[in-house]
Image (cartoon, rainbow, N blue to C red):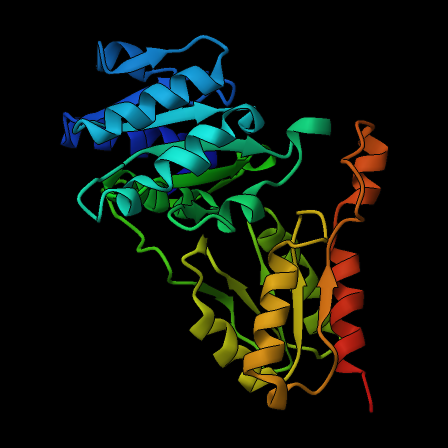
Length: 314
């Protein structure tokens, strides 16, 4: 049975259900997101508060994963633990000929201003051996986190802080959402819009305005960037002939550039217009709220990009 809960509550519920289902699941928390607040007493000894030393407890989580545990580590500053993730967790299965498993989930947050806002999912997507998840709604957050905890590979689970208080329909029962299967959020035949995380809601807002101008946008939420559901994206562009990619990450070597290159290579003959990439500028994220609003893609910018590709004439 579905009911309306928040993105934060959906994550908390996924953790609670997996802790109850599997005694090998443990949670290591900084609690910056306000998640897990009710789990500490329910699962004594398995929900652990950590010091503000991300490199130490992420390394401990990765080590525990190699010894039969399924740790879920909550990390705010990811930059200080790249070595443990890139050079250890991502490599163990390959270093040991496929015999090693590292079922660790690293929950990381972005979108909270200045250095906390930067989107690191393109960096993690670049690293072979990692799976990368970018949930866009409470429903996606719960199902994808359940799948992440059950997965035998290291998973980077990227949560947008601006989504924590958003609400949506979420089933009470436990349900995994398979990785590598995109969600077609909205059907349309005029232009394909691919968006990630919070940008999915921005794309939906834009699509409503476009529909008023008799432009029907098809919105694709990839859900995971590694693995990436390339088939769904290419099929949609094959039908619409036009592509806009909305990515909150900075524009150099992000998912917008990656997907644009994929479509240009695999579906060039289907394109009726140049691909549009809607991203922030190549600058650090501003600390000022007013400047951050200017920095980020918004619905009007997506509308303008979609109109540009629809109205393009050779």
